[in-house]
Image (cartoon, helix red, strand yellow):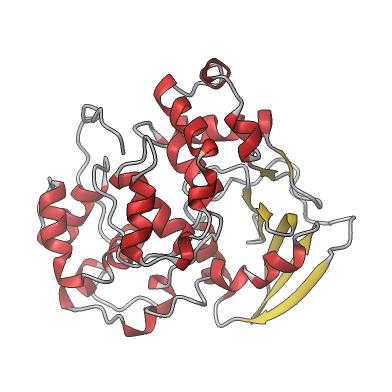
Length: 321
């Protein structure tokens, strides 16, 4: 199952009763692999805006400039059947190629070297394995990232799902997926109401702050990489970890490196140097030869690298991420 996708519910929407507002067929050399790329644009491990069925059908509900939409990607032998519901159906179908990583223009210039191939089992993964999708929805993606700051994956998805179901709304169409709260609505929510959902006061304040500064997220894709990072880091409560995660998941930045992560530094050190423990400094040193593609390499190691040794839980780092 692609990282970030919600698990199949007891009753999956396999037979839509509402006809889609827009449809398209995309030729695909590996439909399920492409759906995996789309699924990894979700930060939360069980984001209520995303859903993956047992047969590989992928759903996502989102806000678009033209209104709400629910997108469905269904894999077939050599095609992806793309359907969408809601006022933003046409927009979401046009954006599907970004979600699938088909507009990852720098992917073709990336060639894995011998150390990376060795870490990936000694053989070159499919080129689809290092293609990066992007959600193209910075506001929604940043909300999920903030909820995931300094907590376990289980805590993150519980908090984000509760947030969407309390102040968001169901997506159009047949899937049981949800759309994030409007910025104006979230900006008015009292912090105490968010803490009642299991979101601690610090993250709750950051969520409200993101909603109040949602306009700063508009137009990120049109900025240079450096300016986009500067804008993100100017937001209260958004540090390097959150900024890098947003740049990767929402904008497909191939060089985003998320420091201050509970697992990534160890995983990179184990796979590229055989060292059981890593630090941010050591991780950045090992990734330096891949500058320009460091997120791509980190993602490849997550998908195809060797599992690192298990140790006891580390003490949480108490700083903004």
